[in-house]
Length: 397
Ligand SMILES: C[S@@+](CC[C@H](N)C(=O)[O-])C[C@H]1O[C@@H](n2cnc3c(N)ncnc32)[C@H](O)[C@@H]1O
Image (cartoon, rainbow, N blue to C red):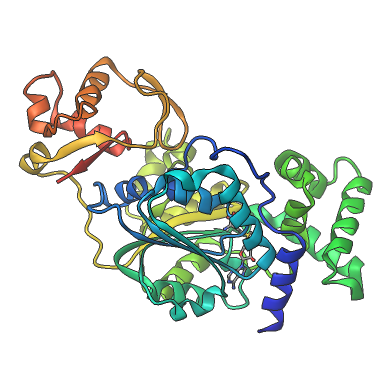
């Protein structure tokens, strides 16, 4: 095993991540990024045709994400891999303790395996989740290529990697701790001690302290989080341009960010027509770059979906096709049956009376098509398209 990989393994054996408590009940709420139907609907504009899918959780850590994968995909066959045996042991315990397996009809297998060697697994996967891992590989390109090769045609991959712009202060503190640790670098408990002393002693208005207090202090009360942030032996941070080079290496298609609201240029300069006009012909990559240059602070990470082509997307511009399709509610919402609810992103929204009535029909289990419902209610095809865009309903063609 490479020295870097050994060091990463040692970190996560010392401080398994995430340090979320083990509960006696399933995790609260939902996370649509781990709900295959909801994620597929976001990416493809329609409901996937099957529920019996194969999922790989690459770098599952202590299993907080894996637990949602189990909860949201009850018929899936899931393999969760990680370098750290301590993290894997906690992940197994988490699932056993919470009772989430009681209603699970698929299979779940945990394996200690570097994700660079996933080619040793027999199967290909319809959905690969790789959150917070690739940026810790000695060669992230090898990792993303290995995962891409295990993705089935038409399959989806969800990735989360760090962004350099919003982690500037973190990088400085990482380097400062390393200098002070000297020969003790690689002793993660000592690194946490040095880092905590620095934050306690730097002037109150120091930039690193201010950022830590504003943004990270709450989660960094846990040593596991503090170590993951400030004493990591291996971290590669991206910007939009290096990110898109990285994605290109995978040979996969970029589908979109899974925090789409952050990537709307309108929120930054939408009030000025001249500026918006100038931006009109930019490529998506240029547009994203412009957004992060104008608003670097929140760009601490990138989270996005990739797909293995050909990946069929439905835009529902064909009226007849739309009328013949079968709608149902997006499973990731909270508060239905009410007009005020939480959407897939867990944002509070209020829907109109007409939307509410249409959605009641969608939820009636009568096997109605969009056309059948429109024959009975006062609603237009464009309003249906708007519900699809807002991820409130999903359609089967
Ligand atoms: C920051 S944690 C993320 C855990 C989990 N994905 C989450 O988001 O909650 C990173 C995890 O990736 C694992 N990891 C790092 N390099 C790896 C590799 N080359 N192969 C497999 N797992 C790796 C670590 O052991 C650690 O548990």
